[in-house]
Structure formats: structure tokens, C-alpha cells
Length: 622
Image 1 (cartoon, rainbow, N blue to C red):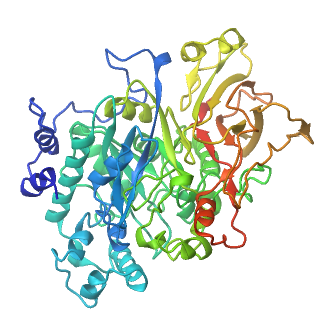
Image 2 (cartoon, helix red, strand yellow; image 1 turned 30 degrees about the vertical axis):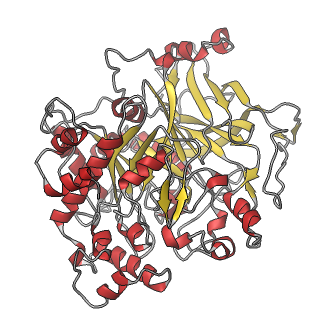
Image 3 (tube, helix red, strand yellow; image 1 turned 120 degrees about the horizontal axis):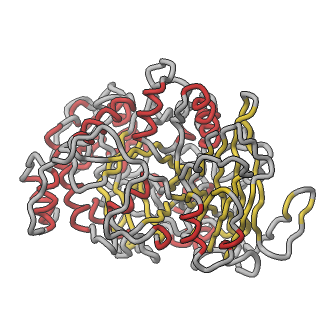
């Protein structure tokens, strides 16, 4: 425990910002949690007086979903890292994880440590013998440090506690508050405006059954003020209660946004027609959800949530890093059909509760945001310890119920912002000028507007002009002027210098017509030398040598740029558009590990993948 943590443990003032200021050694006093009384949020997030013009915004990469040993399940899986370790690793410094020194090669620009609010830090404390948990079997589970049955039994009892069945001894509000002060102190210590942003955050984790029906959300605070306690599923299993917590904080000047994740594991409950109490959705409910949840996590280490092949049979790239739940309506658990439902609900209520932008994240329970496929130390503690590579490569994970080797080291969020500060990044998230990637740091831009864009699309300052002409990713198209044709989209993608070349850029269009929902995918730009065959672009090829765990950038393109005008536009119908960018095939982390250890991949595990990015949609309302 460092001096900042000791200070937080001994001192619990009413204002969390006060402790942050003291720990950072700032000269000025804090505002004490004050601020203007407001019930609303400006979705455009106005620029500060000294902010650069929008055309000069830069892209910043980071992770908005990461756990340390302060999370109950991470502690149960024998992860030993603390929030300070997570920030240091993200900044490119070495840390110790499961007895090994690990280091990220390409540092991140920002990180949110989102430890589970439920029993925050208390399982770690109990495993260290500093918190007694009464009840049969607890002492044995907490004392056992070996991987195996006891580890998973401990996880199961913690989840049972969230559901109100067990673990009352871990419900210690005073200790949770102390650990929350630790989280704030670590973020303040490593937050360096202009260089690295450390967000104060937590995860709200209602799990409606023993291992599925996740309705989890990450809660990201803008700062500089924070509530005195996080809000967990032990406070309420209903997300509406979380939004009420956020609204109450907002009236005190403490702003936050919530990011639903793992909709693929929600058993179809992520994008319902009703509220979480089973009542028909109302306009007020839709507005409340939209105000509090502007973003959704589309990819992470526990699967990609864009769509399924059975939902999108005409999408040849729909089968990507899938991990699905075992019940419910799958259309209520994936982002693309969820966006379609949002358009449908908007037709009835006049408000779209699922008007989401996209982010990607890791959700690792290691304290290490490791998204480099050839530099992946594992992410689930002893649940996937690379010290036993045979179990990792050739067996199903007891945690995921599927081969870990079949899922990539994912993912990251790209944010186009005025600067690398909490305020600028948060405001960009609020206006949804974000995109998700499955791990690589490819730079992607998308704009949409009315009329011809050819006059500036080929110029060096095209993005600066595009902000004046239309709206960036995440925006709502301006009302269509009389006599104006279909919307035009401009999209640019540049590869990650440390990853594969680019295969293609696609536009995914979703729309309503005649009371029904439709989708279509258009290839907009692709690498040279390929023909159109049967209405589709030829595959880019594959240079992966699985035995050597290598590939070459002799195919694909370093950069792609395209303009596209909707050929099927109907101005009377709601629609949205987002871009998807695909890399050429590259080896997955398990292929590198198989090469290193000589242990073959489990039969059926693909040796390669096509990493990708998804931009936030642009929305059209008649």
C-alpha cells in the first residue's frame, strides 16, 4: 500500500474531490462537490474557450473497462494487481502479473479502471486475512491460493451474493468507501493532462442468474468531483436505479455516463421493448436511458456483440469472435438488431433509447490492458494462466465455457477529442465521436452530410472542411433541405503501424420501411488489384504462416479513403450508417503461444483473425 492509499484509508471526507486534490498536492481548494443545478445534459458538449477548432481534433486510444484485485472476481482468480499497477501498465511501464514481469509496447492515452462496485476491495482484503467472513466454508475458500475448484467456488459464492443469496460478510460499506477512495487516489496520482488521462470509474454488475443474463454497465465520471460511494447491484439489480443515482449526482455537479457491455451475454435483455420492470417503454423512459447511456461496448475479450450470422445472413464477416449466452431472444442481445429496435421504438415514441455510439474494451481481470496479440500475458488471473499453456491452448475455459484461444486480445476505444484531458475525452464520448477496435490502433474517421463533397474530399484539410459541411461519427444529420438528394459519407482509415494492412472499408446501413427493419452492407473502399465477383469484392488473401506465427504486409493497403452516397435513400424513413474497417488476416495470440510452446491449437481454433474497427453511427431522422 503506497502513501496515497494509506491516506485514503485513514481519511474519508465528504468530498471525494477534496481527497483527490490533497493527494495530487494541488495548491487550490476543491469545490466540495458543488456545481450548477441542472437536470439535463448538453449532448453536443460545447467546447471550452481555449479549445482548438474541431478540424484539429486528434485521436486518442485507450481502454474504458479493466479490473484489478479490487474486483471480487479478479481477487478470487488470484489476480494481485492494484489500480496503480493498471495505470502504470497502460502508460508503458513494467508491472508484475502472476509472478512475471509484463510490459505494453505501445502505451495507451487513457484508461478507466472499472472495478466491480459490489464488495469493492473486500474479497482481496478477506483473502489477505484482514476481513473475517463468517459462514460455513468461507475461511477455506479464502485461504486456498491454488487454481482449480476452490477458485471457481469462491467466484460462484460472490455472484450468489450479488443476487442476494450469500456473502453478507463481504457487505461492509465502510470498507467499500475506503477502497473507493483508493480508486480515486490512484486515478488522481496518474492523471497527467495532455499526456495520460486516468478516469475515475466503476462497474455496476447485476447478473440475473448464476453465470449469465449480464446487465452490466461501466460508469465513467467526468471529474473533478465524485460521489462518496459507487453504486452496485447489491444496492439494486435494476439499471433504472443506477440512472437515478447518476441523476442525483448530476444535480450536485457530478457528471457521468454509463456504458452497457457484453450484450451478447444478456440473454436477450440488453435491448428490450420494455423497461427492466417489465412495463412498456415510455417516452420519458427512453429519454432517461438516452441521456445516461450514449455509448455501448461492441467488442471485448468476452466476445464481439455486433451481430450473429443467423441475424445477418448476408454479412460475410458476421462470424467474428463470438461468445453467446444460452437463452433469450438473440436479437435483444446484439448491437446491430438493438440499433434497429431503437429506430422502431423511435417511430412509436419519438425518442430512440438505443441511439448509441460505439466503444471497445478489454474487460481483463488482470490489471493489464493487454490488446497486443503478440504480447498477451492472459487476462483472467489463474483462470487462464499462461504458466499452464496446454490448458489455455487446448482446453475450454471454466470461466467462459469456451476455448480462450478462440477469442482475441480485444479491444480498444478511439476518441476524437480536442485534447488528452478528462474533460475533452468525456465531452467527445458524450457527443459519441468514438470508434471501437478489436485491439489495433487504426485511425478511422467518418463524416456525413448533404450534397456534393468532392470539392474538398481530396484536399489535405478535408476533415476540417467536413466539420463545417456535415457531422462526424456519432452525430445526427441536419434536417434535409428541400431538393437535397441522399446523404453522402466520407470515411478514412489508416492502419496501425504495428499491425496489418487494411482489407476494406464497409458502410453498414440500417433503416425502417413499411413498418419493418432492414440492413445492408456496402463495400466503399478496398485495397488495389481486386475484382468484383458475384457482386462482392474478392477476398484480400492471407499471408499468415501458422506454424511460424508470422504474416507479411504484402497485401492490403496502408490507408483507405472513400466517399459514398446512399443509392437507396428514402427521405421518409429513419436510418443510420456506420463504417466497419477490416485488416488483412494476422495471427491471433494463441498462435503465437502455440509457436512459443510447441503445443498445437485445439482442433477447430482458427490460427488467424481479421482485426477490425467500427465507427459510431450517424443517424438520420425524417
